[in-house]
Image 1 (cartoon, rainbow, N blue to C red):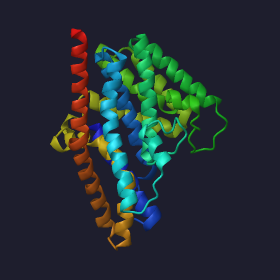
Image 2: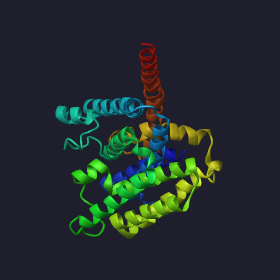
Image 3: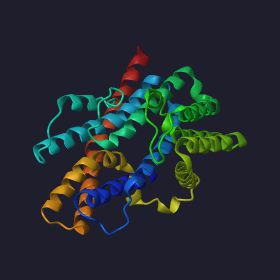
Image 4: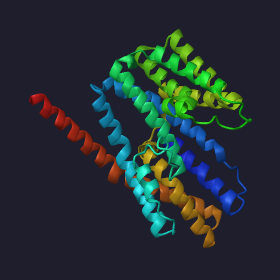
Length: 328
């Protein structure tokens, strides 16, 4: 459910400012940069879900298959679809090298630009998964408290060691930050600690880890970061402790189900559709709802036509392979 609301907020935070900044003024409150805060909520959810997944996995290979089946088929489908539509319908130039690099999902590690700006968060997700994998291989994923302490202290030291940054600017994402997701470590860490607490119950030490995450975010992003992490922490606490149960319904569950596809497909094609409608005299009051509904429809088709079937087939193949291996 939270994923769905977060993805929809990102859509609004892209479409409304795009029309206002590049086409014509919009006389409504502009969500603008606040869309990144929804992505930070994604990171908290990932921290929770990934350590829950590790708790159920029997091997690093199984973890890799589960993550691959969840991420890559939908990512490839949205990237290829967006590229085809952009080139064939909207006259965009095709960049073979950039497309091939982006198909790996490791384009930022390879120092290629993202073909869609929203892919920046996938680099952080991949870094988190890779670190979770080696922690799992060593059995350290069970030492949640020590792992989180080292990670958050490292993130704070990294932020303090940076050259002086102008107010409002983000820390530069160097290799260290990229490999260990340091600039957003507090959000992933909150999710990890929440999973540990939901499994073993809250304790003073776990509350202390949450306080350490909040402190690390303050060190990295200052007072604005402190305000954001306080809101996200409150939201996640409310969701995991049943206080948002009244929001659970078929529409919100559907929105959560399509959130990944929606996040991946909405921006570039949405911008191009908005530009086209503006050029043909469609008013903003009609254009933005049309773009949102189009993104929701396309995300639904991708989720139930690509994501769900591919995930089921890959995982079914893996289970069959493991059964065959066990018999030999």
